[in-house]
Length: 141
Image (cartoon, rainbow, N blue to C red; front, side, top):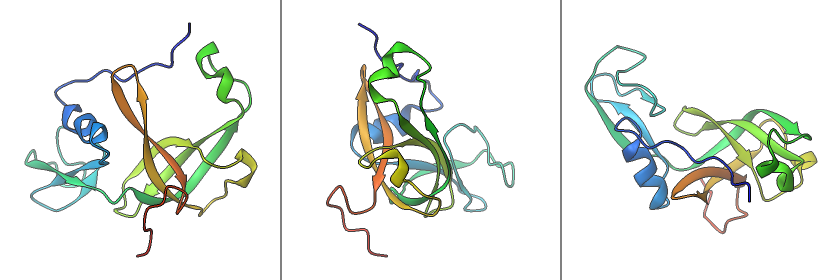
C-alpha cells in the first residue's frame, strides 16, 4: 500500500508538529522585532536575531495563489486527484503551502477565506485548509 509521505521531525520543527498534534497551528515569533514566520528558520529573517519563540496562530487566512493538480505525483496521491495546492497567507502574515479540502477544486479562488484543520500521516499531523466556516469554527474577526 502506498502511503503519503510524512514529515521528518527535527529539533528545528518539533514544537511546530507537537502543536499540530494538539490541533494548534504554531508559527515562530522573533523576541527582538516581533516578526512572525514559518518554523524553517533558526534566526529571524527580518532582523537576524536568534532569540525566537513560538506563538499559536489563529489558523485563519486566505488563498493567495493556487494550482489544481490533475496528475498525482505518486500513487499515494492518486485517490485525491484532482486536488488543490495553495499558498495560504495566514492572518498573522505568515505564508505557507498546503492543500485545500472541503470543496471542489473549481470552487477555490484567490482571496478565499480558509481555516486550518489537520491530517494524520504516519505518526505526524500536518495542516490542511478548508473553506472558512466549514469546520464549525467561529471565523469572525
